[in-house]
Length: 269
Length: 296
Image 1 (cartoon, one colour):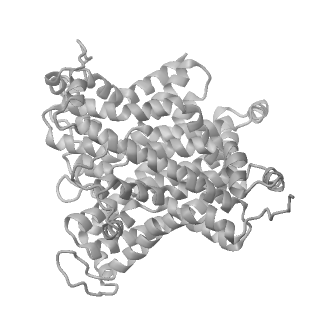
Image 2 (cartoon, chains in turn purple, blue):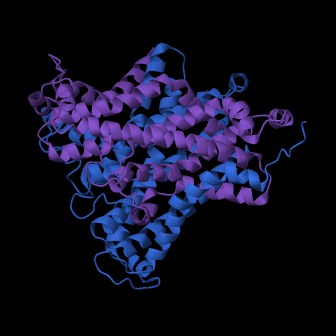
Image 3 (cartoon, helix red, strand yellow):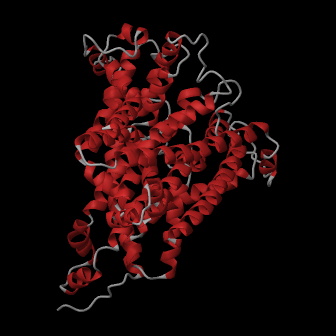
């Protein structure tokens, strides 16, 4: 019994900031500043309505940008890192071992180290301040993580399966996509979820690569609206809530795979 | 018709399976690192041409630059707090929640939710909460504290407030990893220890804790790397302040120097040094923790 009480108490203290967001999304704008911690009574949808119908369409524009960037990045990342991960896991050559290490080192590179030259690279290729530029950057920056997850899982797939399919006359591409890839579903799920959440929530890279023009994503949109509309806290809270909703739904739908992916890495080290 | 094809990959195989991924990685990660190193040996500033080669002058300058040394100190303190606190509290919460039942399941979700929130959202919520006239200080005033602390406006305090916010967000990650680790502890071992007369503390120290070594490795390395590149929180919560750089991390300084002040050469030297520090510290810590795993 005491264990339950302690757990409940610790959880409640921890929950306070989350409560603050939820309560203020549905509270009248003038009450947010006055009594931020009170219950939203009577609840109102005015804040959400205000964000959805802003004349400059900030929410819809940044939502569209975030969806395009996140979906394209994770699709390309899944294809490229699954194939590269498979290749590296199956290869026995020395140079591929080195390549694996070079890729894994990428897991710890802070984005600040590469952002300055990246803007020059993108400017030269006319991809600066464009969605394709940001997507390409995401793919390059997160490929190590995808390879790390996929190559770990490929080692769990018996090589005999592939040999049998090759003997039956299938091409390597066919064998990979028809036989191996379906067996990697847990890896695919965790790559999609992790990278989906990271790229959706990313702040620094879209801030710098997309620049200050119309090209905001949902997080940079929140950041800019807090500067411009300091007075209208209701809108800021509603925007944060709406920006989080897709990730939350995505996460709740795939929760099991998420935790499995997280801990699969932990146990394999 | 089935002629036997080699099962192990050949170089031709690399062209289709490996090359696309490697190519993007080279273009967007490896090449930029080399370019960064190149810039760091110059006085490159896009608004003040011409570019001149200055050798290692930028690096030499860094070690006498008080702003950079302050950022190094800020980053070190932040990293120590962010590696230690969520690890300790996360283990505690995981031990508390390591039970079956709807309540414990619901609480797991509560602790994990901040992990999937954007750091921008977390930063904005907490800066409201910790504002000088925010709910926390209003509560303290109601309790009779006349001058509640300026959590984010006091230069001596702001760094610790920012660190606490990062810890709050990372706690759920540690909880989930430790919970998974606890599931791997065989009940028979714990029972055997109990029969041998070991109390709860002794059982934890002798059985549970050593078996959690892989969990400790993953949380520590992830926390270490993410603490080192802390930028979002600093940018959104304090913009480096209050005062002159009370919360400015190296990650923050690199981008300020490179993009706002346009000292690209100097910022690149800072970035390269930062990468070197991350690489060395991570490798040392990882090796130490791994050895601990093997020993058991």
